[in-house]
Image 1 (spheres, rainbow over the protein chains, first blue to last red):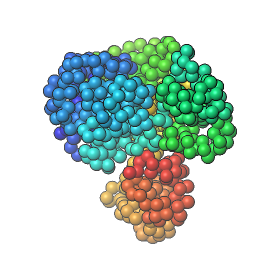
Image 2: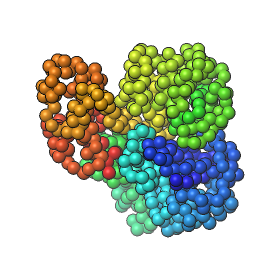
Image 3: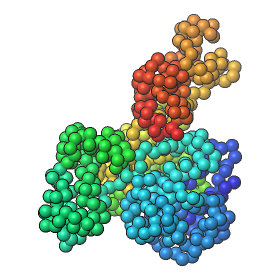
Length: 315
Length: 315
């Protein structure tokens, strides 16, 4: 039997735990003999409250070294948990002996606090990717991946991506057939098409009101199909092109070209979600030279086509 | 505030509850003022154990009439719950006053026991669709749908389909924008592409060993690309075509033509999942006249293309 521990705390995200737990539990049911012995732990044991209001029972967290896999959940409470020195110290000291250390969603902040993610490619919920990166410059945060394995550490994207990751772990332990059968029974995809980016909302935060680029960014977002060549943009803020590129990139975290591209993609996304306009019209309204350029750029950002995107998020 | 009650029992399926609960709870977080007041009930109250081993706290089930929506979970324990006269009686008596009665997964067996599904189009987990239909001939069970609304009753397909359904209920209550935003945050599709059939495993159970069609069914399944025209099949079991069609259909629940088609589709599905053969080869091996016939038949069964199927379940 492989002992699996889920680490919980108050205000954990319930699906970070119950999603993967059900994946392991369904594998047990489908196998001739169960493989996983699942435990739910918290630093003090007893009742833990999830953000959805459900209260679950936990065992006190001791002897983490006895587990095969440790799964750290995310959720609003993960910020407090990342500052719980007792928890962090136990994770740090036991990690080298544990075959698999896993974080779901914002559980990555806890693994980061335990120093386990330094110099590693990692992921987290799309809405927290920037925050995770800013909190620790030694991480290599990849906001598109559904999960990333690096040595004995695996991090996953937001919430339900924990199920994609758990299927991958089961495939590793007992093979593809069982993993596929578990997916069928839970009515989830064995391989989710496309990455996490397709779910992410537009996170472009134009700088504060007094920033020289604030109005410029708003204008690009409001009218992505106008002429936003660098020469024109630089002229508008009365800078040389070189200065403009340098200062704009520092202020927004994106080059002017990338910023305009993101604004255009976002405009196209909203049109695909909310209208039934055809691709010609959407390309025109969002500032792409042709439907073909829109299609190519969209695919590069989302790893799926505009048509697939509309199917999943439109209507 | 809309009061929502989840009805739990021992051996409930955890995701039937936590999936929709998190959808409602995320909507509360995104709205300016929370809309949903969520309760977890069981007949006696106190600890309820899910099949994945997690124990959750519940309130005792009283005064169901005070709720806006009642959500009945499924899971292994639903069979016992469907025989709990106290529970069934409470559901039956309060149902008319409740705005929305909802079942997730095998929770449909409980609504059926309460007499609420008679003469209604309903759905449940794909693996239990036949059983639900056989248990109550007055139901119109549709095994492909992800969820079906009929009057104040809504039933959903297996496990994670409860989240698709909950998004639909939120859209109804507070609009598309919030529903879409909830889906993004939970990293799930706002509209899941295709129906439940794409997840279902081959459920064709050839009759018992002493049945005259046992060997014939096995042969069709083992060699779907041989000649299985009715004239040849009837000859093999030494019956007239008319007698053969009548007796085969009664024994297997499918006409010979449908049985052969299902066996061929299943062969193609497995090839798409497990191999990288091209569609020409797969059509040939599984007994379709051409890749185009395979593509058309596949789409009719699964509501998605062979290519999309491979993307989700292959590899």
